[in-house]
Image (tube, rainbow, N blue to C red; front, side, top):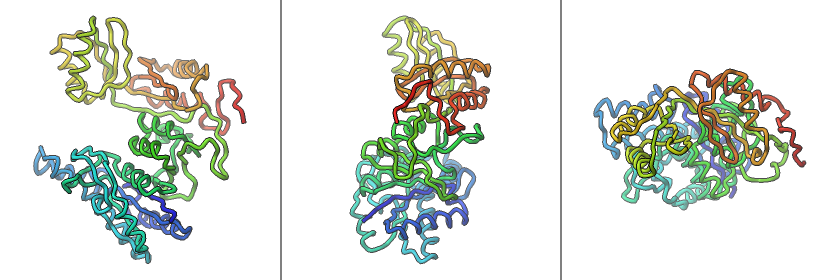
Length: 414
């Protein structure tokens, strides 16, 4: 049995046209002899009647401080509605589709109602349905804990459901259908010349997801990487290969080898920077401990004798300032910042990439406030007003809009 998992996002299911397109992809898989397991997100986005944000707004209108169990129970309705409606669409076309909640599909999670982690999947529930020649349409983003209570997996959790099911069922492929044609070299709303990537490694797409590309949830990529589940990111509205994500050294049949050192450019906005004067290790430890205990997440960090510079979400700035003042730590804070990141698994050990980044941003008059890097990415902190200018400049600098990769003068072996 060739099982594939097909996940459809909320924008793909928001209207009749999108649902018909989704049904066509499902029926094409059936015609090829595959057994699809479909996973859905809630229909539409903020403002839509069945979107997750709509249910959250409804809950908080009734009670500004809803308890987690009740809120999770309500939030899960969006995916349940989407599963039922898409099943009806398929049934109207002669497909024996069966809508399932996360619990009915065997998804068991931890007890955290809002940010649960999947503990296990009772795959026999799905396999029995497939044996009956029925097509399961599973509500993503949700499961049940050991007590049978509804839990949710956090924003983007339907991706996690899809890849986890793919791993449990040993699916040959997980297809993630969105409103774009695949993973792009940059956000096409910022860079009109951005191109879809034919292929990416798990590590590259994980970095891009973590650094601002909103095509797939980072936790879903981590699961795919751990269990070796191939992913294809494709458009609901187009026919095409999309972006294939795997760890194969050789390209898939018909796929050209990609010699790029740089895969893409991402951006994260809404950041703040703290430069704290800390003279001793005890004060430094106390500062980071206090921030952690108050759920303040730290991103870029540079540590110097007597000074620690780090970034935080802008939404945590007022709280952080209050905490640092309470600790009597001298600091400077700057708000309205953004991080732009150059990502590429081929950059490791290649000289000239930082020079290219610095030169491109300098030429555009974009000051760099802070940097950080790993073996596959380099991030620069800049002022938010320069985001579009910076991302476009870096995209051009590495020739990502063309078929000719920038190679820093290094000849890659065929």
